[in-house]
Amino acid sequence: MHHTVAAFIKHLRSERQASAHTIRSYEDDLGLYASYLEESGGEGSDPSSADPVRLRRYSAWLAGRGYAPSTIARRLASLRSFFRFLRREGLVAGDPTAGLRNPKQAKRLPRLLRVDEVIRLLDGVPTDTAPGVRDRAMLETLYGGGVRVSELVGLDVRDLDDASDLVRVRGKGRRERLCPVGAIAAEWLRRWVLLRQPKHPREAALFLNQRGGRLTTRSVGRILEGHLLRAGLVDTASPHTLRHSFATHLLDGGADLRSVQELLGHRNLTTTQIYTHVTQDRILDIYHDAHPRA
Image (cartoon, rainbow, N blue to C red; front, side):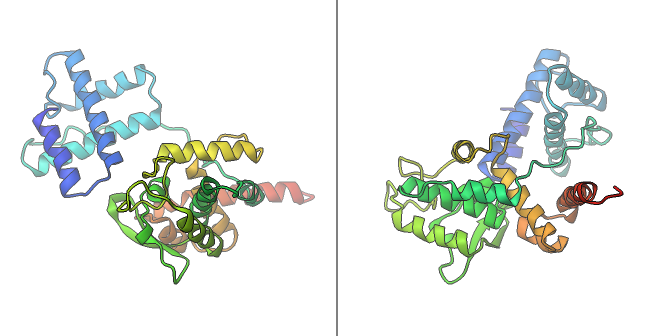
């Protein structure tokens, strides 16, 4: 790892308190860029030695290797953050990413489950075993609180509030918020805590795998896939689908956008506004299906 990248990663870890997943993403993105520099020759593999022309060529190189526009945009965003850091530290004079544009992306609305589909999924989880109770508690929390899957697996037992239906979650940037999950999810969480058997007495994680350690986001995805199949919901869905469905169902029920923003833990309201497009499309579908002059 080049010393400038190592300094940036140290900054992310110590000052910005980025998650392990975020740090791995930056390491992967900047490592790929360094590999490109080595392959293309000329300036060597120093990621801090770049100019706008070379960065545009890098963007074209990513497209030529078949990366999706969203992936290219993320890798370029990593470079922007990297060079902002270098400028603040006085390691580069200018910002070669200033005029760098992301590739055009197709507008995609989030995949959603209808309310009846969510109920079928949750009620279909067999709860006659401890893993089943855990799975029901996890899925109820994902939908009942709209939490990110990374927030879910990061929950510790101490984050539950027995006196209310709230959990303390740590979102992006380690920002904490109190998140209501609803009475049903809270009840399943209490049932799971009674059955929880950690491998070590000091294990803090709320949701455990079969070995008694903390579950990973990938494991939660695989668990959800199994329950989707059991419920006959074979369309592609992910833990984030439950978060999208949570937000959309709230707006359909009359919640205001600012409240949904707070519940989702979005820093900017513009991030939440995608759900207004979803609900507008649903309103139009209902209109076209029901109105005799549509």
